Length: 118
Length: 107
Image 1 (cartoon, rainbow over the protein chains, first blue to last red):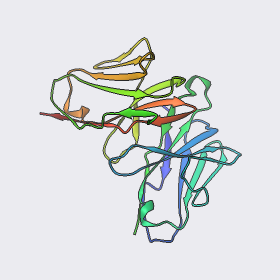
Image 2 (image 1 turned 135 degrees about the vertical axis):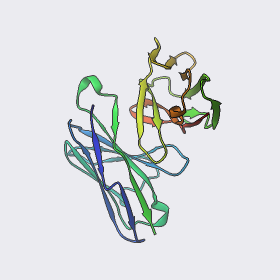
Image 3 (image 1 turned 90 degrees about the vertical axis):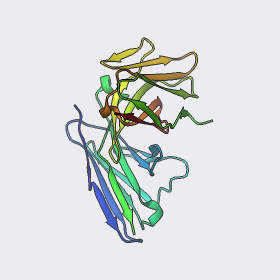
Image 4 (image 1 turned 90 degrees about the horizontal axis):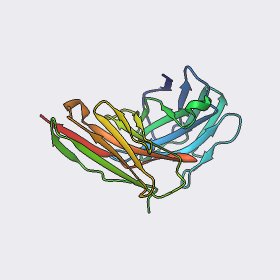
C-alpha cells in the first residue's frame, strides 16, 4: 500500500520558535498533499491544500503567513509553524493523494506530528 | 449546517453485539464516501469506501443512501479490538471529515 511518512513524530518547543514538519510520500508521487490539524476530542480540520510547484490553498481562518507550506517536489511537502504559541499545540497530520488515476480520490495519511508549545 | 454530521457518541456496547453508525452530508454533489478508523493519538486509517450498492468486508458493512444523503457503517459480532473512533468522510473537491464517533466494546 501507499506509505506516507511524517517527521518529526513529536516536537516540544518554546513559544516564539518556528517548527518545520515534513510530509513524504515514500512509494508514489503526489501532486497534491493536504495538511490537517486535530485538537483533542475533535475531528481533523483541513488547514490547507498543498500543490507541487504552486502556492498552497488555505482554508478560511487559517493564516497563510503563520503556516507556511512548501511543496517543492512530487514526494515532499513541508509545513512550517512560524512563531509558535501554546494555542498552536495540536496534532498535525498530512495526507497525500496519489497521482494514480485509479486511486485518485483516496488519500493516504501520514502518522501525524504532535506539537507541544510551552 | 455542517457539511458532514456524525453522532459523537460515545457508544459503549458489549462484545459480540452489532453496532451501527450513521453520518449525514449536506452537499448532494459529493462524489466519494469513506469510513476511517482512528485509534487514540494515531492517524486515521481507511476502513472502507462506501458505494450505493453497499460494501461488505468481513464483519463490516457500509452503505450509501444518496436520496437521503447519509452513509452508514454496521459492525457485526463486535470485538474488543474494534474500540476506536470511527470517522466518516466525504469528498466534494476536498475530503471533509465528520467529528467521529467514539466506540468502546465492553468485555
